[in-house]
Length: 324
Image 1 (cartoon, rainbow, N blue to C red):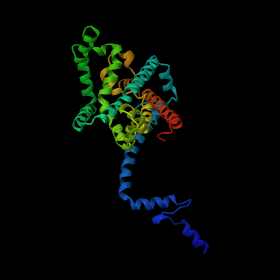
Image 2: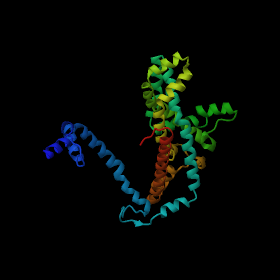
Image 3: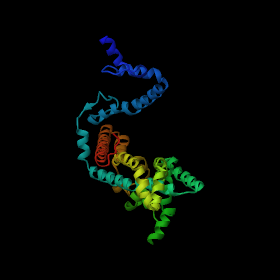
Image 4: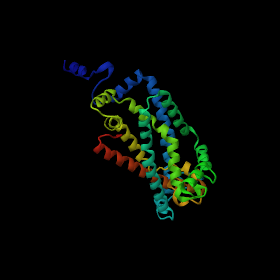
């Protein structure tokens, strides 16, 4: 009788059981009942395993004098020498400084820009006009970076649309703005705003649609105008999404994209445009020093991970919202 009673206590809902050794049993039961979902899960896991985790074997190059002919396990092990070469090199100060400045400027300008744009779109009541503006704002995101930066180069060269506008505003002569160090960063940041402001606003527009409309009605009854409704209803309603996106953005401050910079920079603006990722490209692809480029890339990734974890920890303690 006691044994029968114990077996009954182990039974759970629809074949699932509870107990110390129930995990694998419940997993098999769940797989049999949700075969299609697990099939999709296998595809996703295979993608990450093949394209994200398997290439991490190549990180061993950061600690080797890597020779392609000898491979990962035949090249000479040199420990932390590649890291020492980077941190004692002549460009380390410039690279870190430019990466931090461009990353922070991008965070300060291009993180709030989609939020502000989404808030403005949310206030538009004419549906046709709102959809038109949204569609137009999305278009630059789907343009190839090569084409987009080609347009930027054309607009900022001597005689270009932007160069002419700057010359009229400053009272100077139209010149190639990308040949001037003081104009590279504004051009890079604002070109990013142009490309991403529309697409980046999608997630905030989705969050705005979930804000309880009764809160707006209550605010109107209390005499709140559009600005007060935005400050006391809209922004608190989407605050968790803003915090989540901010945490993710903090992890990318050091990951300033090399693709756009490679298309825009030239010897005239190297002192302000050369960042860690462009250095990795030059050392790894052009100079074929794969060990050094891997070491620098690993350092960059570790810093990004540290910033992600730190911002997540701080916001978890202060705002009680976090990714994990």
